[in-house]
Image (cartoon, rainbow, N blue to C red; front, side, top):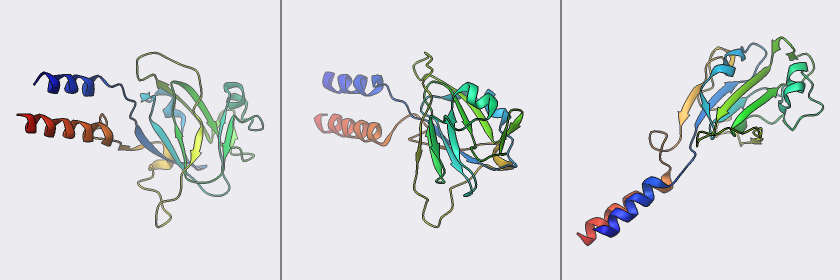
Length: 178
């Protein structure tokens, strides 16, 4: 029985970063200003869906403020694009001329809190994800990207499949040892 308690403590004390996916319709008609105040956490992902005339460029704050994409930290024009957030502020613009302006347009600033409560400053880097079967994304955000459509990862957003499997395995072991 003591062994089962040790395994349970190990399972519950394992730190993990699991986030929520937010689908963003990346378009000229979107209003992305409200994202600056959203409560995001390290490990959350932004999934951008957009047409071939757009791009998702991660840039510095000064390039974000002036809508300059020539110095982009990362630039992707292959929809859908997923950016998994790290702790700190991430600045994203559309690099197509005229799509971003210093006062608005296709620009997005998000700040993610560290999962452990600390803070960081390393920006997230985007990765391109393959298009789902059928060629359409799952549940894109409505209103031009102003409202995210979260889809949880794991069980209630707190356990991954690996943790769940480990817990079920330990439960079975405890049941067998009686």
